[in-house]
Image (spheres, rainbow, N blue to C red):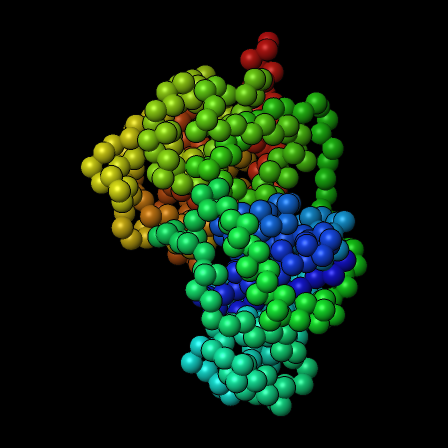
Length: 462
């Protein structure tokens, strides 16, 4: 198996579009492509999955640690011809200015994978050589092997860019010069790109993207600079479940599509049989489930449909009231609130949701929260005992009314060592939070949740 990382000097360089084009071209050549995304993002992996036909997995050194990044990379890349990893932000951008934690560069070093930069050439000529040289020389342990220039104005512009790099950086290949093309932009909203469920990329778009990449990127050279990977020596302990599998329902549809693939993998390895259901379309929960996982997404976009599906709301409410273990994050948390208001196209209407937590959610015109979070459990819970430490990410454009003091707070939250107070709200066996916790930061969380679901199933049948 080969591997390559597609990175950029900064966000907005065209990295995602070009990564999708490369993946699609490789797939159309009959190759099996294993997609990955550096960082906590959920949007790009959805598009990767659409192209490659297999889940795209997040690789995050800060949230999960180096050993887990290596282990999950080789686990999910098994059987593929090439692993294509899309970076995050700029190549060296991470949680701070001193270390490479949380950056694409950190993942490149952990995997030993070469880096191809996607550089926006608009408004630049020979200066691009200085830019590329700075990235190539910044960290000797990060191998920048190629560059693809985007937004190239003309053939003459492209020739200048090539000459500049080739005359100063003989070890960095110019893999392509992609001309400006507004038709290749992917629609976006305030939270980033539209999800793949809302904007599944028409065949015409993909055909044009493939045509552009084939014509302007040397895919043979890209294949040659990709590194041949062997199997990792990193092994994560896996205890086989001592009992039969326990059924856990996972909300997955256009409204609830933000979930780390490794969270699902770790639940399965802990003994869960995951059964997907749709709060949008289904009228009842799957048969025999002993737990629910309500991931994030855009419930506010589908607020009217969710609000109108009274049988599903009743079923979820009944599960919580009956003591079933339920874990909800961000969009799933919003779904468990009284409801949502303040949507851009419907500022005044209130859409009623499940109502487990007696507070309403208000959508905002500006971002409310963004960044990594570290959580310590203040009490025993369905995801672990008191003192359990986990890491995750928070990103939302909404806020909730003040939670009544009688609702228990389970999370002590920190960001870069700064105390952010308490969060993580519990009602019976339901735990909900704005934070997307990555179970890879503490795999015991998955085992704890599965065990609580199994105990609930045994009590229900006794």
